[in-house]
Amino acid sequence: MTKMDMIWIAVASMLHPETSTSKTVSRGQIEAQVAKLFGPSITPITPVMIERHLVSSEDRQADKANPQRGGSRNRYLFKTVDGNAASRDGRFRLYKQVDAKHDGEDKSGPAHPDPVAIDGAYRYIIGWYKDRYVASV
Image 1 (cartoon, rainbow, N blue to C red):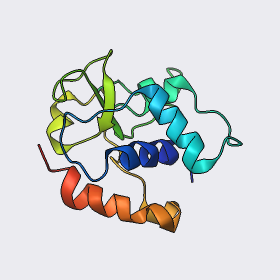
Image 2: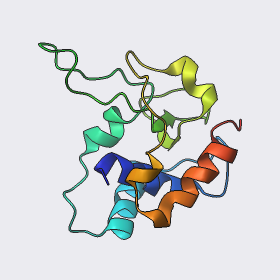
Image 3: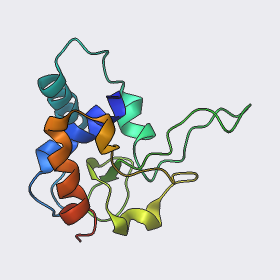
């Protein structure tokens, strides 16, 4: 499982079973939940991964010399102050379909981990995300 997937699972586990756009979590809560779920021995999650790489409204930070490399296209997280509008200073929730209008440049990747790539104990939460969360407003 990648660190990106661990971050998504951590956020999803704190939001589940609610689907409201108003329920959000802080970066500190995400980091603590990753450590709680996956142990403190994993390589630390970098703030830029949470704040930029996985946030849908942030442009993909590609390698300028080779634009095919670098930066995540994933749209795992949405950062917001009011639950609806994108914000640089907000808290985090999972990406929803209504957030597409805020997608940053080249943010065209998946909004959740591949179920096959994650521990079976967490696959139920991807089902909840796809069936209930992503389309809710």
